[in-house]
Image (cartoon, rainbow, N blue to C red):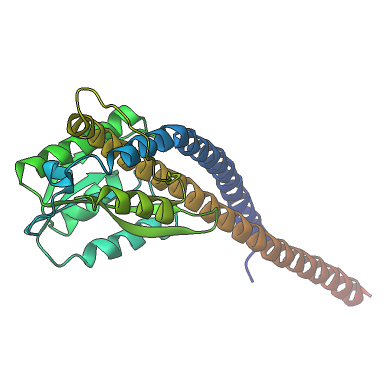
Length: 292
């Protein structure tokens, strides 16, 4: 049995660890709530874009826009969104499994230090990595989105896909490989987006005569890049909410384990202390008996 001094030292160490994990749990919970609020704040913008796109659906030749043209698949473009730090359970490991399932030729782009390190370690074709701060500002995500769109339009890649963790609730984060470009038809795109994300209201058909200036194709050509930027930003926000949620759960589990370990150490300390006291009493009694 360990000495009482060693047990006290371990109890102090575990208490300090529990204090740290509890603080990290509270911080992650606060950040998760803020990330959810930011994601919800963009719904009005998404609904307005959906309305305009629906109005355009029957008034343009979809083959005229490069985002709507289906290409021969030669090289996929994949944006991997991971965390900058660890201590978030198996969140990143689940994303890495999706990357390992990619067998066709692909070029990778990364947001998050963990993803960048994994792509470099696994010697995959990584074109660029982007730094996005914890608040996930649109201006920073836009840089990554526009860079990939430029590569797509130049023909360097034939798809734009995003591998990220979709936030469902506090306990569940699902690794997803989400196709961004090329888009299906506008109607199918809007229906799929509303069905899969639950964040965009799919508008009903509008039979009114709407005048677009300068014309409907020009409006579509200007509008779709905004929608792609917005969509990738929303995926990054969902990934950030998943990160904070996974870290909160991991830290809560660590805190609970520390509490359980403290109970065991306290019981062990009491037993050791009782045994020490009993031994001292026996030694005193034996000494008195010998003296008698």
